[in-house]
Image (cartoon, rainbow, N blue to C red; front, side, top):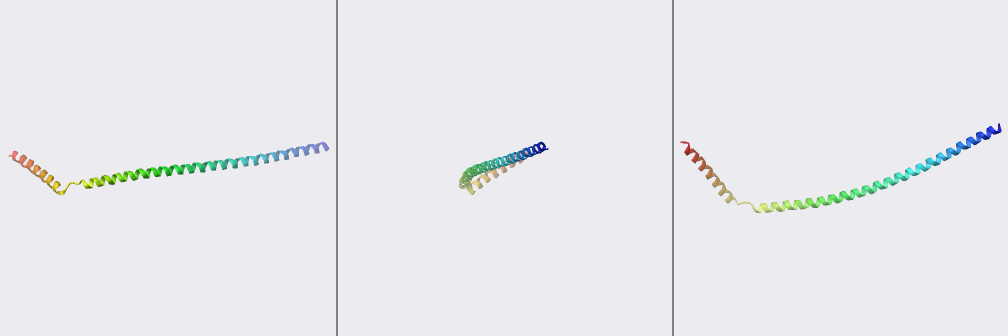
Length: 113
C-alpha cells in the first residue's frame, strides 16, 4: 500500500511538474508573441512614416510642376492676347472674302445663261 501511495505521489508530482513546465512554456510563448507584435508595430510605424514622407515629396513635386505649367499657360495666353488681329484687318479680310464669294456666284450665274 505504501508503494502504491508513493507511486501515486510520484505520479501527481510528475503531473504537477508537467503543469508547471506547460505554464512556463505558455508564459514564454506569450512574452515572445508580445515582443513579435511590438516589433511588427514598430516596423509598421516606420513604414507609415516613410510612406507619408514619400507622399509629401510627390505632392511637392507635382505642385511645382503644376505651378510651372500654369505659369506657362498664363504666359502663352498673355502673348496670344497681345497678338490679336485688329478689327480693321479682320473687316478687310472679310470684305475681300465676301467680294470673292459674290464674284464666284455671279460668274457661275452668268455662265448658266
